[in-house]
Image (cartoon, rainbow, N blue to C red):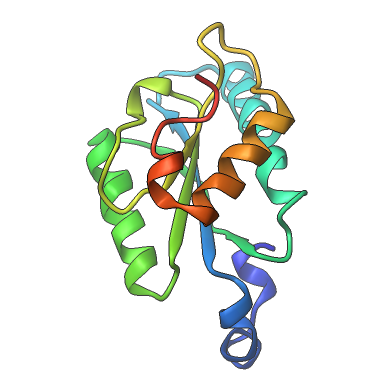
Length: 144
């Protein structure tokens, strides 16, 4: 579900069922032409669908972080904030593979394949399920 689907009353009732936050990261630099920005958003949408659709009843998707000034550091701070807000797990869905780093508050990275392609839906599903079973099993980025 999207973060905007919850009122404060509804969130109080449903919070126990939604233990995983999804943070989309476009990673635009501000130098993209309109068609390049559109293409990036479409690629991010395709990656997000691999997590949002099959795990709709357990995840909450937050607003996308479109522009990065301090890269992985900013993502880590936001992930820590999401955990402080009550989420047990944080999945980052990012277009830039170089941002993916182990450790910190991020439990799983979903990134494109090394050739830029979209990861296989089955491998993403398995990585998410492994993350829920045992955090250490899912520390490496999906799409590798």
